Amino acid sequence: MPGLNRSRKWTFVAAVCLVAASFGGAAAAQSTSEGEVSRADVELRDQLIANQESLLNVYRCMFSIDTLIVTGGCADGRPHMGPIEATPFQGTPSQGELDARDALITAQESLLNVYRCMFSIDTQIVPFGCVDGRPADGHISSEPNEAVNPTPGMGVQVNMGRANWTTGFIQAEIYRNLLQQLGYDVNELANAMYAPRNFYQGMANGQFHFWANGRFPNHSPFFGETGLTGLARPIGYQMRSGGVEGVVVDKITADAHGITRWDDIGDNPAIAALFDRDDDGKADIMGCEQGWACRTVINDTIAANGWQGTFEQVSGSHSEQFADSVIRMQDGEPLLQFVWSPSAFTAVLVPGENVIWLSLDNPLAHHRNAAVLPVEQCPGQPCKTGFTTADIRVVARNDFLEANPAARRLFELVVISPLDVSRLIHAHMGGGTQYAEKDVKMAAAQWIAENQDNVDRWLAAARSAA
Image (cartoon, rainbow, N blue to C red; front, side):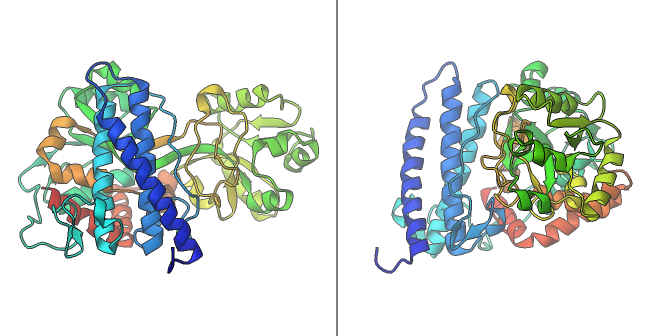
């Protein structure tokens, strides 16, 4: 391939391979017959979604566009982490699951066509070709169009719910703000906070149109339990692998001793002794409080791997233990600390900066899925933290999505970094414990301003879809 440098040549070859994989998957996905939905139907689509997202990342890195949303970033004009792997499906196969994936596949293909026309690459596979650097059929143009209605949601009242956990507040307010920019009339969220089961029951009863706080696969059972199956679906990937929890180790100790996994500590008593706080020879994990499910997961993981002699979980006040861990790290002492993201905790102990996530060779059976995190944050790839990693997604009623293509397109496109949210919780919400609604709104406005280029592109695409 004359004219391509080595990294561009690699990227081009990867793109060609992924195009082939995507078209093969698309043909297979479209061939699904009517009738009972199988796990294979869902997993086939998940693989296609992973292939198409990988190709999008190839284009993003090749042409330096939207690189902030490439997991792991770009290096030498290509995705640092290589192709994305599909996460094994853990929910219940349903037509709603297929519909959500088919919508995402269509959205990805439309965005691929935008890139193809914008940069004159692979244009021969764009339906109807390209005109003036954009798809001829008019799908998703980031260029302004005088004929496009800037407020397609004008006159539409949107009833939105919000999670009752503070780490979901900022994302919810971001979506509310963006919908308002499209003209929608969206309710205030301070009095619309719900636990998941209550929210999904309300959505099934027609009380809500959507929320931005779906966590999957964790929330999948609520669809069947509340009668929501077929009435609503998750849409877009606000935070792919955004709900991460696990144990972090301070980066100085990890780098000095080659620690990337629990196994590096549990199988090596000399390394375990570095983290011993009570002189019993065991590595002390500053873990979860009594009654928290994560406490059981940590203890069961230690037992399942035969590490009772090298690991010990310390259970007390998580906030107090966390504060003590930070002080110890600042004093140069090693630490093992349980945290989750997004949260204010990961704005202080920042994966990739002063700590790394520990991976695990042998997680418990129900916690084997890998988090899609950059190698800087989790060097032990694949990043199996020992806990189920959640995709954070919008969940919306199907009738609302069908009646509001602008909102649907927005939901498909928005991507938010968990570390951004952690930073904003720490800066504006007192770590999630001391805040007013104005602080949440200020944090959301700051995020929008910091990501204005992407926001403008998403809003333009939403307006074009109306």
